[in-house]
Length: 71
Image 1 (tube, rainbow, N blue to C red):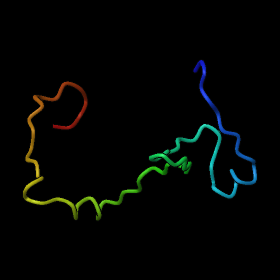
Image 2: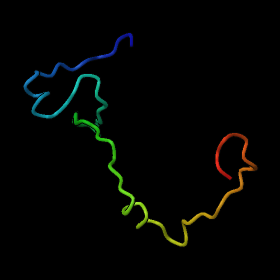
Image 3: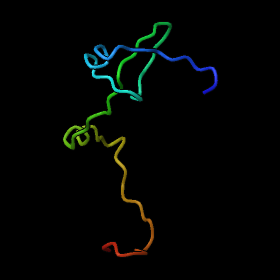
């Protein structure tokens, strides 16, 4: 981008922080804090534990099969 600023980070710090070139980072508030963003790790048991009667959704009819999916 035109007049964008960049930050130069020494290779040793990149390695110690497990930061990679072009990795997504998060910057917060008035402080420049650069840390790698990690994708959330999900497991089925944890997801199912979050199901409650208030957020449980019933079946949704999407119409008849139109391809080779089973009925």
